Image (cartoon, rainbow over all chains, first blue to last red; front, side, top):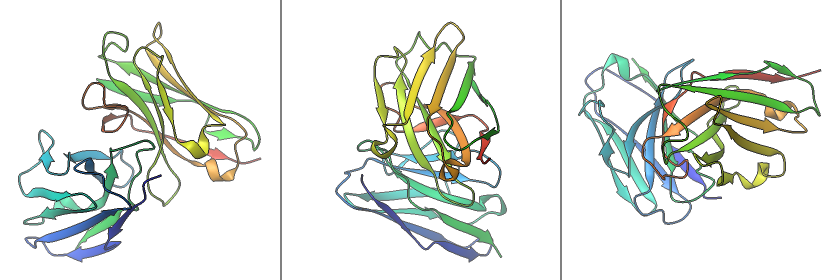
Length: 107
Length: 123
């Protein structure tokens, strides 16, 4: 299985802050990388697919980049509704593994 | 498109967990999409279990679960099913069904999710 890691495991930031979450794959996955946001008690929501493409309806303050083994998700100006846990997921090969998540709190 | 998981919320150890995902607003058979099952143990991250193609003829399973998992389709009822045998407490989790965003994606980009169903394994 391809192993996914994320850092940090949690962060606390203020409204308006710029935050970045990092995801690393254990092998080259090219741009086969998705990002999800999950709020407590809810199913995950697909934010970004293919490393950098915003899913329809996702605000433009979200952006992502990377290829190969190293990827980032950035929120340019954190909003109160952005709290939750963010997961990266590789879509290169089965099983389609997820990272352990990054919990984002709003100060 | 709406997905809704259902099944018993409590399963005894060593028994078989059986869940159903009812799909509405979309035709399972008139498509080229994959349907996936994903679970989340309490307080932990997401684990992809497996996926099935709309024809029902192609499935992918997580290798460590393959010996215990069966995913199937009931096109007449517009349902996707998950069976997990010989369960233990480690199988306690929220179970989600989901459909890929794009056709022919093998279950790799679940974009439409059910609300999930909580399953506890306990005697």
